[in-house]
Length: 157
Length: 141
Image 1 (cartoon, rainbow over the protein chains, first blue to last red):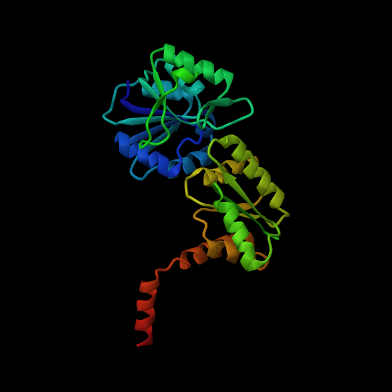
Image 2 (image 1 turned 90 degrees about the vertical axis):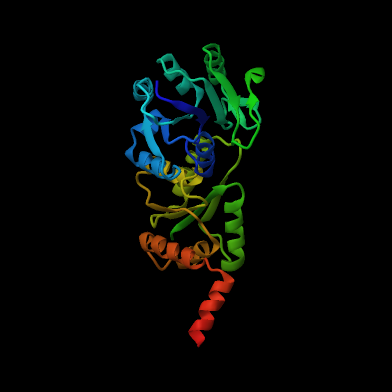
């Protein structure tokens, strides 16, 4: 397994200063964005890469490619893994990627979603995904920025 | 006429547009969209595309956003696929001088020239009082 120091769900993926704060907090030097849509769009990939904090390596890959990549031997890099929703995380953990802790940083309101905790909203499918991820041994918590206290979401699911 | 759209986190874009009206007197073909905490990002991308499309009468649309790399700016990158037939330019780091200049000059320039021009306007509008005063005093002597 690659050395994953931080895994986060954020439907905005990389966005400006927030990611900079997490990079400082976790001392990561590589960001792996797992998103099937962005992975096949060279223009979006370029924009997404350029919006990352300076001096950090950014890789954008499909769920399938991420499973292969993340289960490889560690190469000394400290990785941040970013995905838009828990379905992506469940796919990669089902594929053999081990994730100890999962940070939930941003899941906005949507017609099929209901509020879970503060600004975090989930659909029924996503709720079930979180439960399964927890059963599989991953600790799931909400924390938008490093300065904020983290909240265990088990009680809200 | 070139349409103008301002995108931001929260009320900043609304403020730029409404304060701009104080100076230029018109809000014709000028619109704004704010992203708020808890908003769904995919819906924000869709609404951005709808706004750009609605502002385009064939002359194209100039889109301003508040922060390079952040979601309002990224929305304009997602629009490339959503709006294959709409001409637009997307400038981050909006400030009041570039916004006003773009409203005032949009009927005299093509979209590409206007976007290059107002980026310079925006940069030139950033000055520090005492540094400027020093420069001006030197020039006088």
